[in-house]
Amino acid sequence: MRHPLFASFAVGVVAAVLVGIAVTELAARWIFFSLFVGIPAGLVAGVLAVAVTYAVLTRRMAPTRSSE
Image (cartoon, rainbow, N blue to C red):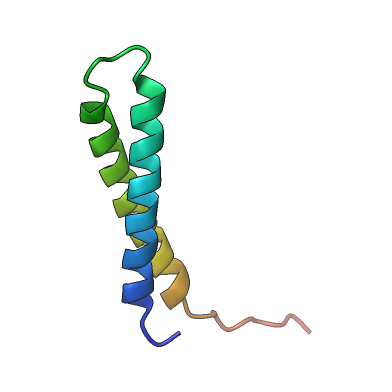
């Protein structure tokens, strides 16, 4: 993959939107302003998704050591 940073940001945006909407809808039963809970949850999920995706896409295979 030529641009792992672009792909990481794309995954992060999708994760932030999906988690934000899901948390907002789930919290709507109990909290009137559930959007104030959903937005931070979405942001945290997006940042974590960017970090994990970038780490996975840029990881180099460590040389394996054979014990033969």
